[in-house]
Image 1: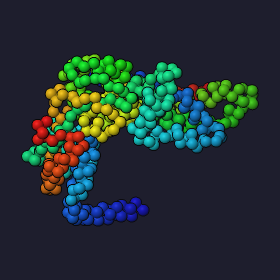
Image 2: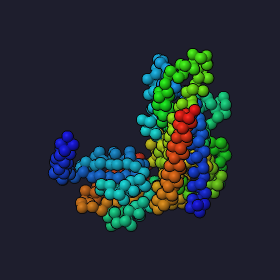
Image 3: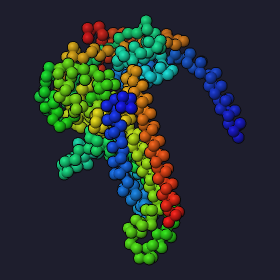
Image 4: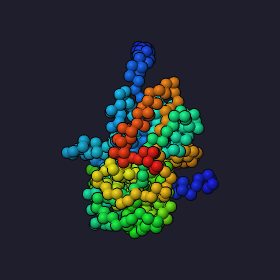
Length: 257
Length: 232
């Protein structure tokens, strides 16, 4: 019985191995690993692309670790440069083809039941606005949105007053959710996240100089055939694709951002 | 050892132990009652209760955390009622972490207890009852000592599960150092940082040591309990 099954399994696997190269050659699909914040924009763009595009969304750090361990990605779009640098040092990306695809901004948002009377400026009284409630942010040591947010609040000189009231979430969309649900009156998220949710109000944008620039680097993964990845990256860099990204709230590196 | 873990890691470990202890303690009376009901009583909706108890085992933890946030959050039906009437806030507090861990660990505790209760010969309980002992007294003097090994095993399983709980906790009470940053949250945060593997691995070692210690302690306690039952 066992022999019977293992022989079948072997047959099925060798059959799959024989077919697979032909299937992939026929359509040249691109497998993209992309930061979760890109989902709505990239889905829209992938639908208009000639070849099939498979996109796996996740936290940039999770995706980078998967690529380190041999995940079959053709193109990586990260929400921060640090993880792209790590992959470049490991020789896992085509360094010469690395491009800064997009930029983003950081905003302070308020929930549906909050009447914000705040202006983002050095020393603004965020602590008083919070009272006994919490400020929702992504993990301040680990997730890019949280790292940028803490840097911005630090440079504005308000971090010390609010640090103990920060509720950290595992990704920036979870922080957005806490504000949408009214569990936290305020939150720090990307401009694109605020754009995606009609239930929150943008109190204001953090000044660009208050945190390191938010850039989304993209690069093909080193592999036998980087051409389809390069072609899709070139497509994302066209002005037409840029318009779609801008519609979703992203900035383009050419804007001087 | 104190150099080996930083103050933030010590805090996460202490908080995890504290939260898991209270989660186990809180779910124990409910666990015994529900396991007894499922094992011994016939009633309408028994199957539904059984499914409800096991739901946290099947649902993705993030979903359980989200449901907790919707019901026990400041704006949630139960959460706002608790705040209005008792001034109790669970969201973003260690008490909320206890609730999340308790609910996630509850199915494991009930399973162990139910098996232990079903293994007790009902004739022993009936004999005590015919001699005139009230129901609760029968439970305390006959059933409880007999299920003690199962109760210990269930509690330790629940404790270990509570120590490892992550998805529901971070969704419901987020990650606030000293309040809700448990060991798994700290491990997760370290894994997101380039070069954070070393710190993450140290915390993993600590988690494994705590879990193994708890399991060994429960084996030893359960064996002693069995010996006491056999000896008496």
